[in-house]
Image (tube, rainbow, N blue to C red; front, top):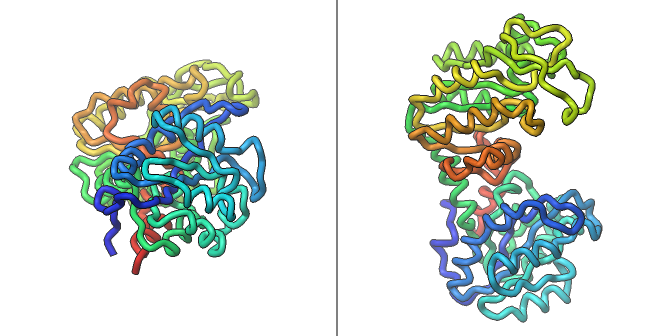
Length: 400
């Protein structure tokens, strides 16, 4: 069945249960980044403009199936009220008679945010009874939480089956359109840029992309594994020795498919291996073939940025997932920021794959120059592997 989205539904005067992603970074009771809350506004404002009443549900943090004050969503309700410019009521729980009564009392245009879903073990376990209890809060289910789309939790995959009607929100629609189009019908040349620490977390992504892209750029610490697989010395750099054969296999598959792989040709290294990352400093920039045995590669160097820039110059579609180095430390941020600057200047569809890459692009100040920044780290990775995400499957099957 085709998936429906909020702008295709008749929701006038209806009570919506909207799964949002308000898993925001906190410092005590203070929200330090409200990007995810702000990202939900188009969906909420469209629903409110149709005279709907809204019951919002989300998780926050790693609550382990029991109430924990430090993971309360109360600060999110306060911040959402400020962003929406209208009151947002807050429920003391997410299920139960008291909460059902609060939801039932909502008038058109009113908003209620439920307490953290993960205060109940049934959420993470995908418990059908928990999903049934949540379904009592409204008439139409809307999923606008791409960040959890890969998790078969009750509010993601169980709840839609309990509702008479369901659809994706506007944020989910944008993820579907940009990630789907970039992967299934890209304007070519199509280049994927991948980085981050581990090959193991991106192995399935790399294999899937080899059947799609014209060129694959590999940076970050995962490049070390590919270089060592080709016989190069990588010193004390992070390497997955058990994946050297897999790295060689990916290089072979790329050659068979005519996909060029671009690897770094130089690195910024540190002699501070063993120290915490925030205390490490840059010692030198060295050729990829000349990493000292006591050095640790922590960023791609300027020649690599230039090389990757040449690969990207003609690209018409670029998907980027994974930073080029340990950008959290300013000594090792230049490579990631350099790639962000290149992408920002392209006449191309540029899709940023969430997580650390999202944080890096925002830190570069160039986020408004990208075509699309995914709100889901793990979800965007699984989508890029070609997997059907539980959220999308549930929305398609709803109402059968």
